[in-house]
Image (tube, rainbow, N blue to C red; front, side):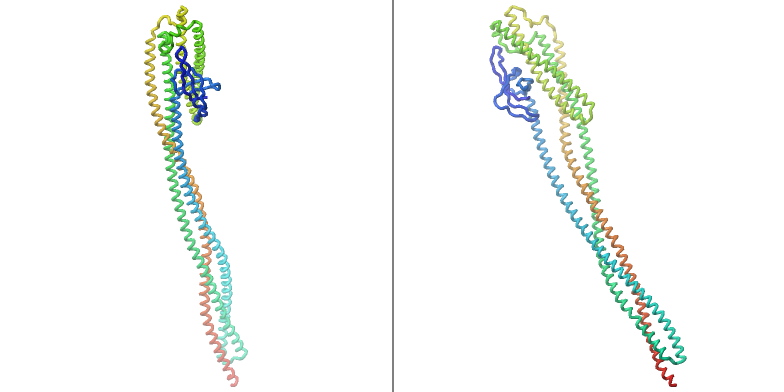
Length: 585
């Protein structure tokens, strides 16, 4: 488990080093969660002796509080603070996005309410049209009944006309007979009573035959009145139909305008989406380059560290071991120690050195294993799909961080191991001098390694320059990627919001088109029902006009008949008066 600890140096002992302890301050629970350690809990850590008192370290402890790795906490704390700052900025950005979403939802709610009110108004118009259609259907039924009544009256008038025509023909025949009879009477100048009564009876029938014309005029006028009322109702419905047609036409124009506007907005959205996708693709390419640069920089750092270790070891070999000035040891105190106590101290130092050497060797093996795992991950990333590559790249980043942490820990542990080796050599040298034996740590036959050291140093400087260049390029790439992400992320959110709004508008447009189509269909049905009624009224009007003209003609004929009948009565009366005189003669 990872802890944040403070170095506490306790001075004492003949070697001048003293013991080092780590005061545990905080414990990492999760990646972003730390909790304070209660009390004054401390652990022994010889590896912390190379750090000054008060230094903050990150310590990886086992369950039994054994130190596994130690790392200076400066950079990780800066990274944690930077992550905390980024989280705060992200939370602030998310709050702004939430506020934008609230405003967008408020606008959409207002827009939906407005469209709901429009739909309600159109629903009322549809209900009004349906009510008008129902009223028109009722009036159509009434008109159909009236039309049937008019047809019946027309048939009755036709029957009466035929009867009048028959009476007229009969009258013409009787008139002809009377004229013939009159000619005979004038020739004979006589008329008996029986014939006179027959003639009077015929004349009475002719007089009463024209009485039905007045009734026909009355019925005809009633039908004209009913037809006028029906035409007034139809005129009202024609006016309503024209208003509904204008409304439907206006709704269709508004719908087409909204469809054009929506199409333009979709085109603008697709253009913006293409720009966002292109920017994301460019950022992805730059991220790939960045990963490659980071891996190269990591390799350069490892080579620099190993060149440094090689340079240090060669320097130690050239100098015959670790310089005495590098380790602070009280040689005078060692010289005064008894032999047995010195041997016991050397055994203790040897044991500590062996333990540290085994631990460092194990850590180096783990570091090599980590390096192989990183190489396997890099190879796997090149072979998987784009979707799996994202998760593998995140895993690669975590493994690189773990590798870096382990490698930085090993740098200090190697240095501490070299220091322990130097202390152990100096104790052995003192023991050899006191016992009169040769120094087992002395180097026989000097070797000139200065050219090798110069070559290593030149290579280190060149790689340091290369690393500086690569790190500069990495910073530039990070800055460019960050700028692209800062532009792309709001654009993605804005595109999603805009797409949602366009989908809402598209659904509303479909609903509006369906409503307009319903209105147009009902208006067409309205017109389809009105036109036959209007044709029937017009046809009935024309039939009534023909009947009225026919009645007027019959009325004129009737007047002529009355005059003829009166003349015939006069002739019959004259003949009836002359009959007694003829009998006396």
